[in-house]
Image (cartoon, rainbow, N blue to C red; front, side):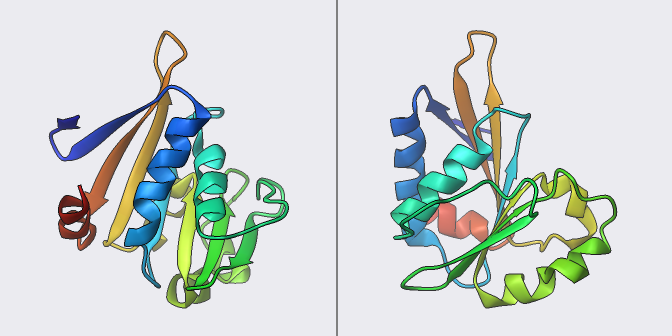
Length: 154
């Protein structure tokens, strides 16, 4: 379902989250940023794990909540998964290798508003939420160059 500039995807179960990840994975290119927004427990990390699995990552995929960054090698490009929940100031991103990660591969970032001044214009925003019936859903919002890419893939 499309509303305004967002495409809404119901995520009633983990399989639906995995289907969204499988749909998105072929669109990814080196330099892409996926901004995962939503409250605690809304499904951000579950989506990131599903996407990493689709991209061929095997083994443990821990949440980067405490390390702030986990990096993975895939057959096509490296993937850098940031969780900025505990980030105190944006300048800490330099210490984490933010700019190198953006240039090097695909960047997945949870809590992207904590890096608002460092986000590229071209990005795909995924807003995860849970409704009153505890059903999860995602609003996909393409920004910049992602608009055409997302529209062509739908």
